[in-house]
Length: 394
Image (tube, rainbow, N blue to C red; front, side, top):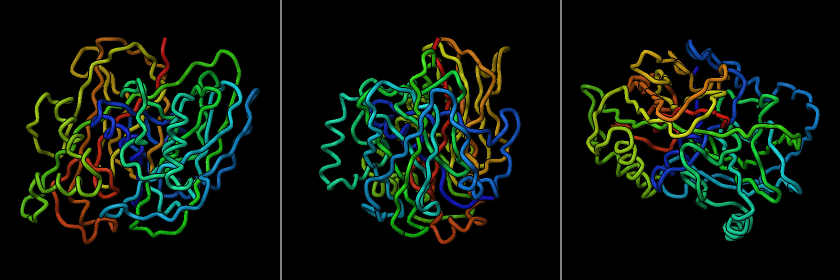
């Protein structure tokens, strides 16, 4: 069943960071929502059951801390379009270094919330975050892409994410040997993507964090693998936005000057050229630069998504499929735990996505929208292609 929302979180961050030199992360491993070697399972009822599920018991050494947006916020489009990205400062009041070992993100208005991403803010960046928030009287700020604050040292291979929520999301408890490190005095920035096609009811999203100071936990990191989206209009369909340049102008008007940098940056990073190769399937292969152990994988697309695949060392004798979603389910985007898989410098990771314009004739969320050439965009009715790996380092 396809309805709305999606994990633009990962994608958004990856995109914005590509536009400004690369930075962004993947949500920590969530309960299985797809099979690592099969297709996505149907989640028609999974999303609605998410909030009803009872939280699991705390483990030895864990405490629970709940933080929420400081005020209720009524979403509105800051420019044109039907999408609002808003960043809120959350203070978990950490008085010592700790690990996040689980989280449960509770959207106040699930019908309006497309995704939620939690970014960690180290003590060195706290003053900047507080100052930015003060400009709106503590009501957050517009933040298409990343947080707008930057993240020194962050790259696609080590994103500053703590966690994310998307359709199908539920309480996320990490394996007992890993955690996401948070320094004493750190803050969180909660990025909420609101889809205004489903209303503008005031929202106050909250987060419950599992925190642990247990020794011996391995730090968990996120690696992002974005790929281009270059999906032309269907044969026999026409309109002003079927021209690629006009389509890029449209996403730029809605999301800002970073949009063409993302579109072109993905072509350069993945294909080594600014010349697109339009078609339903696009991919990106990137060489591993640092040894790691993959603990979970996830993929992200939007409503036109059809299938998604993540491969290790493709086209070689040692090729291995990490994730194969044969039938994309927009409402079921949880990460999939995998057997610990070591990757080393020189290995390659490929993400491939197939999109299908025919969904425009089938999905209510796409009804009435003009035909268009689809490029990477941050709105619910735009598209993305993103692979995400949760890893530990040797």
